[in-house]
Amino acid sequence: MTTTVAQLRAALGEQPWLDEAVARVSAEPGAIGRLFPAAGRKCGREPVAPGWSADEAARAVLLDALPADRISGEVADLYRYGDAAEKRAVLKALPLLPIGGDAVPLLHDAIRTNDTRLVAAALGPYAAHLDPPAWRQAVLKCVFMGVPLSAVDGLGDRADAELAGMLASFAEERRAAGRDVPADALAVLESLREG
Image 1 (cartoon, rainbow, N blue to C red):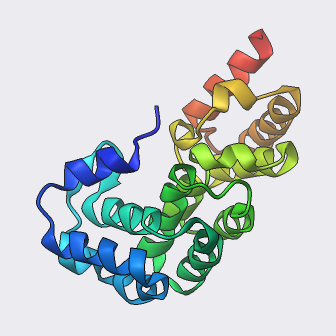
Image 2: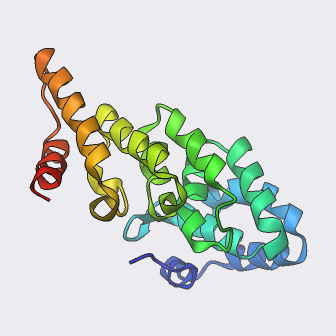
């Protein structure tokens, strides 16, 4: 179940800076470019909700304050110019925003990186917008990089025979090289073979 923006805001507790920042972004959307990076300093980085740190939650709240017609453009800019923590916050917030499939290019970019945190965030609930070939490649990249497959939202629903073939080939290559195959990849492969 996806956490809502309202739940994230409640989990943050008393945050006068965030309340002021939300009002500012609502009135002047371009202000988010200055406020988004400050969330870590102003709100902290401790965990506040399952899978969310305070800075990520605050950034999701700020994104939600944008007028609907500005969300896609601002999200793209914040991701493009953000540091790794800001990019991860954008990726995690995507399923909470009325953005449709507009942000799929951000997922493609994150999946091309070697940052395991970005790859994992890209495979959250918003990854439902990835087409099947791109999604399968991203899952395989998780296995290759050591990202736990528990990070892949909807894995049980989307895994198919093609993914099974890709995982089987990967496992054969690893074994031939004398290397271990991640246990979660073997478990997914086994469940696909049984299904």
